[in-house]
Image (cartoon, rainbow, N blue to C red; front, side, top):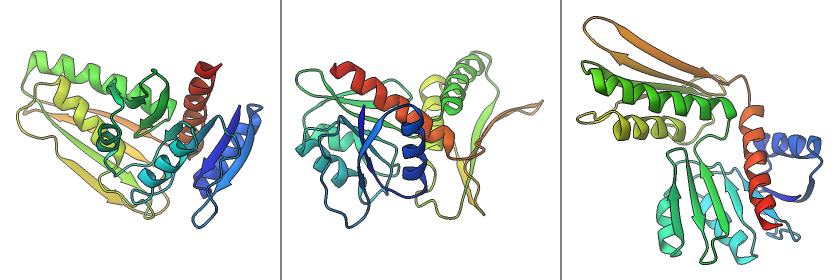
Length: 225
């Protein structure tokens, strides 16, 4: 698979490392200020900033290249609607399909395999607790001081899952903490007068996020062949 990496910071370097380990070819590495030439890439993987993600995706589409995007804090659904593409939301990922049914965008707030298991657990727990009643949910997310969006996209996804599956009146509050170089810790708490239920996912580094993104790119490339 020929991959273009858009955003060649720490995450971009980790994506390249994993892509090469999995016997793929990195044909373009694009960072801020670089010429936007994807060199006949089969798929682009985009991890940049909320301010630049949409523009990067549009440029990739202009060259006919589908995108796996992990940038959070921007209106991905609005972009898909503006481009009159079909929007598919499975509760964990947002997918844009062209008129011919080709995947042109896969967006997730978190590509980590472990976090996606956590998403499944969060949905299941919300469904079970909603049948019992008596509990109030809240979320805490902790990230490194360099993270630009607050709350994190992962925390927003967790809250959306709870509200969609838990029949909760009102909102699910999110506490955001920025400290040190924390890769990402997410805790969902269900509190009642009698007891408290807590589930937590703790990322140990960026590798899990990068691996999941490369796997998503593999899915797109395999569908093209």
